[in-house]
Length: 129
Image (cartoon, rainbow, N blue to C red; front, top):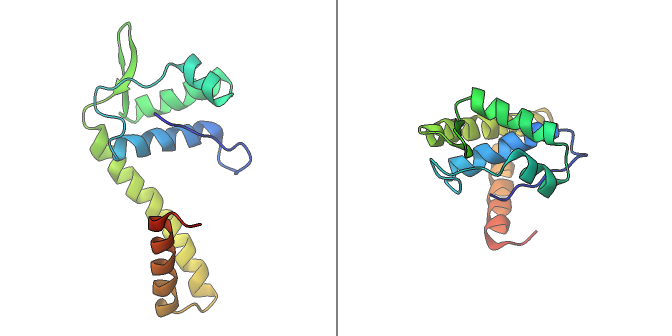
């Protein structure tokens, strides 16, 4: 599992970890039954406090995404893929709604938005940024 945190982006680090785990489960790069890195291992890799990773893992457990496997650590729970896919769409919808509200407040037309969307989507697909 690849995980990166950005300490200065305004989102708490534990939440960034939660989001990245959820997205990895949603796109199945983390499969059901697969173990996540230990708290210590991920904290070292990300250069963050182990308590931060532990907090993220506790939240993911309480949400039914991860489950403890006695003696081996935490693994992706059955049913987590569907939960994470729903969460992923909800998070994207919230961000999209915010962008659309800003566009509407600034009189950006639907056609301009569509053109902007297509242009950005194309540049992301081609790897140009």
